Image (cartoon, rainbow, N blue to C red; front, top):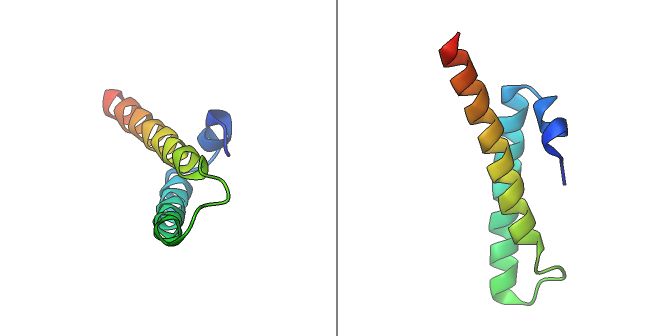
Length: 68
């Protein structure tokens, strides 16, 4: 999982691409979880948190740009 510092080093397009990848992964995990038990049941929670962290940083940048 990425830290907030790692995410802040990325540009907006990279963050959006990573969010898209994580959402795809979350979808696959949900699908697999409905069929059988997941190896790591905490993984969906970790992915959701990482997506939220990335969205928060994008929003911070958006608000900082509006102030300028």
